[in-house]
Length: 383
Image (cartoon, rainbow, N blue to C red; front, side, top):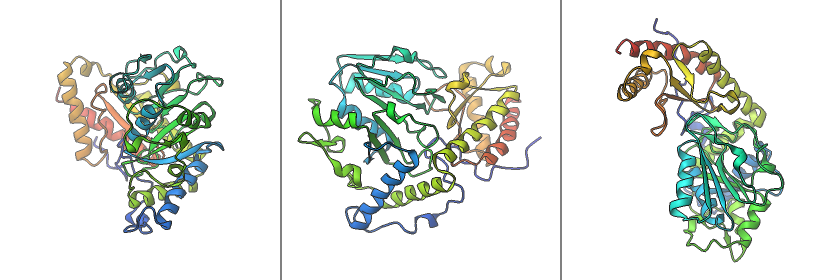
């Protein structure tokens, strides 16, 4: 039967993600709108985002953190363009964004000594193939595949190269082994439910040394430049952004960080996301038609939770009909107000992608699962 209880917040998009519980526009009333980001008040707020982020994440002393343009994409591209080329590069990819970084290394940066290790959606490549005398580029959590690396055990503590990690859908929801990571990037729009267009980049002392001692020999746009004259541009990591940020978005980022502190900091955020994954794991365990794209629980994401349809009546359909009915399922959930933006990513296998980050209430996922079953039943009747 058609469920009677809807999720209170049906926003399950994987980016921009759900706002924190209780969020309203009043959260932005303290924003320094109409003021220069270089004025005392603007710089103070930007610096506060940096310091609160470092504190919540437990970032080690000696690491620097900056706010940069163009979301996580801008942040990771800054690292690739500014740092790669000193030594060989290994790229590990198991979904669309990691594959994009591999393609950029090959076609845009034209790196001569490049190795790419790839796996299909739902799986990881063999991480043991990483050569830590080289630089290694990888995502921590595959946002479009629902697959994450299980831990940092595969990263050499005595590495000579840099570990460059796109962690945009992992930071604030998963434990990051900072001592194993040299460059970590993310955006505000993911786990804390911030607004888009702003990225963050964290650098270890080893990454800073690379910036200060290596010139890549390629033109760098202004927004990619993190050093000058062999010295780190320190202001970037103290709130002096390269370009003009939105002070409304800055205020929203501060609101998300304060909320994170109120729910127990990093441990509380991880617990919330883990509880969300468990709801879907319990439901999938009893489902006759849905399964995880990441079959191995050890590498299953708790944020970008990707599902595939395994009902025999569905899998017997042509690929075009499977895509059509999956789209109908997503549309039906949206029409009913049960779930917004839960279709699989355009390059990923057909199915569902449900965000389970910390800003999503577990009770909303509990309310969603009966709607998933009902909507699939409606769609199946049309086969």
